[in-house]
Length: 260
Image (spheres, one colour):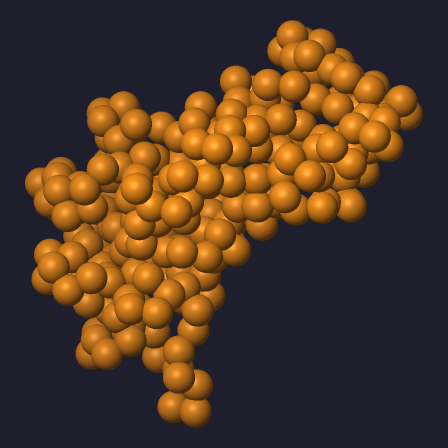
């Protein structure tokens, strides 16, 4: 069992902080919100949404903040009088459910994360996915940083807007997507084809590999096109989140309707 899986089983409670994150959750994925701790001066808009969704509310006292920070292990200070306990498992969409309801067109783009370890990268990729019209972010169950409160925070609440899709075996998923008409692009710094030259005329999947090792070889061999990002030779590489943002933007320039 992976270290993060052990920790996830031990620390079942996940928290999000601040009004913005909670509003995004209530408006886009209210089913994940289990309980909310509010300061006494919280505004009516938020209170009305909580009542509408029958969500339990407790007072956010100084003692409660201290206890919640210890439980989360983050020591969050910027909670703006709002802390919410969420169930991240309810945020994840099973692959079969997602793909059976997806209308695949040439304007469809997905991203598959292949063993990313940094929650900051995962959250930033989800945020960029929302910005550039990505239809879903695929996250494997194994050897991959899971969706946590930190990921949600870095995503600026966009984890509640973009479907987060749980997948099993990466290579089996890639094979199935290819059968459904997707062209698979693996981000690889050594590839001759680059994202600025590609027309992206078919349904597209971008695969983002591990921060250090990149895409695993067997997965890279399944890709239709290894693809790179042109950059100054003085820069060794971009991190996974930056590379994803550039790739999504390059795709969106060929599909302007996706971000309207």
